[in-house]
Image 1 (cartoon, rainbow, N blue to C red):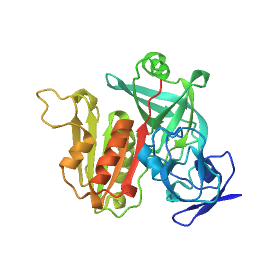
Image 2 (tube, one colour):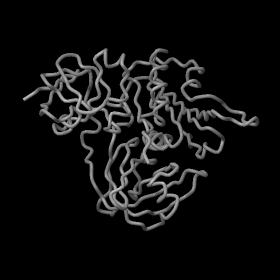
Image 3 (cartoon, one colour):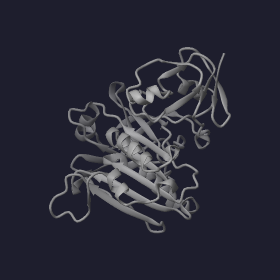
Image 4 (cartoon, one colour):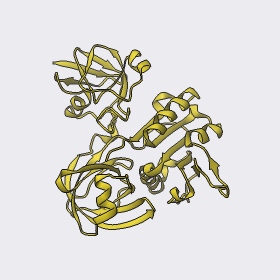
Amino acid sequence: MISVKLYNGKTFSSEPGTSLLDSAKAAGITLEYSCRTGRCGVCKTTVLSGDTEALKGESSLTADELAAGMILTCCRQALSNVELDAEDIGALGDIVVKTLPCRIDTITRLAENVVEVVLRVPPTSKLHYLPGQYLDVIGEGGLRRSYSIANAQRADGKLELQIREVEQGSMSQYWFGSAKPNDLLRLEGPLGTFCLRDKSASTLVFLATGTGIAPVKAILEQLLSTPKLAEGKNIRIYWGGRTAADIYWTPQLDGLSASFIPVLSRASADWQGRTGYVQAALLDDAIDLAQAVVYACGSEDMIHSAREALTVAGLPVKHFYSDAFVSSN
């Protein structure tokens, strides 16, 4: 049996032909992950010792990262005893992934190409999750798409999703065409490891593009309902869109030491706010990144660009958490 050791000392066994991520999960250990396809890069880590082999393409790794011994745990199997520069996420240890029936409760248009869908599950089957995680909605014919949960846990167990229309998208044709209240669907979740971490940094930074604001909204609700999590923290929320119409939500920040900074990449002449890209706006504000934790959610391009630029500017590598939205039809 092959042994895998994490840098915090925990170990688990790995079977040939099984990814490191799945082997950890089978042992009750949760490693960083999101898309599970090799595209988002969230499960990226460094092999400190031992040999691994790719089971599928690691498309989000650069040639330099591969040369430096970096791998994606969702794509690699262990060939020998291995030590990884990765840690388990204890906060997710009690999370149970379920497949549940659900019905559409309401559908509300938030913007021309964004709808809010609220799902309800059976009263005896509430989904327990951490704000920031996502779920898969399973529609007719087994069609499956991933959406971040846009709310912290509610007493009624309802789940809010913010869904952007994808041109020619199979699921979009349903959401923006025939979907109606009381439609029966299924969901699987919660999934992913995007959630608030216990870090001593004095500044919490959220970077979002498009509907990447959905898990940020959920985490902000968590901070508002649990003030001790935000105690002594300066919170900055950067949300990027193309035009003002893309900024379809305004956070309620009463009780938090927080700033909301919408940033437009294609602003009209009458726009009075920030322009450009969210990661550039953060860098322009010259905060002390050595004392910050960054949570980034949105497009793959933004995630990769932000990670590189911010770590070069002084953000500790292990203080960057992300959930990249990988495109699908």
